Image (cartoon, rainbow, N blue to C red; front, side, top):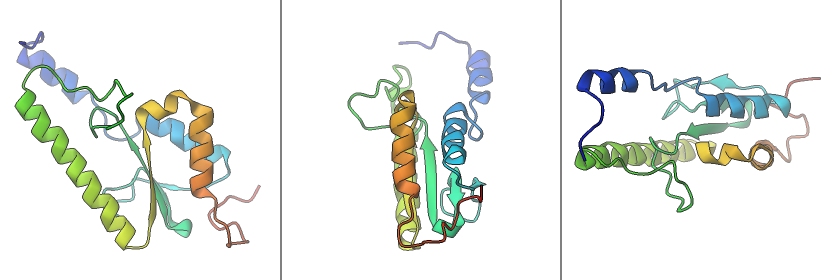
Amino acid sequence: MADTLTPAERGALMARVKGKHTGPEKAVRRIASSLGFRYRLHGAKLPGKPDLVFAGLRKAIFVHGCFWHRHAAKTCKLSRMPKSRVKYWREKLDGNRRRDARNLAALTRAGWKTLVVWECQLRDLERAERRVAKFLENPGQGRGLGRSRR
């Protein structure tokens, strides 16, 4: 199937795809903030530059777009493969998945706990909030390290 856009139109469309401060990322930020947790954005010193970094807890959250990071859930319709230039997209998107796996493994080896929140999981915000809250809970650290004082 041929692309319905000209190369210039396709380039302009792809240039508007953001890597930081996306809608899904902002939704996870709101969840973490509403739970009283403080975080840093896009930890440049950590493998994969996690979207939210809770340094005191040694925890990091990645917010992945289902298309770009190839969400493997069978129910996710957002991770479909494009119909044009299939070979290019398969290599590109599979490379993204391999890189993500390497980054998660490197963080784990360094003693970090990680959570991946998929774009499609944010359709049910209550469930996403429960998942993030469970991940960020820090039993055994009675001081609430990483939480803001309210």
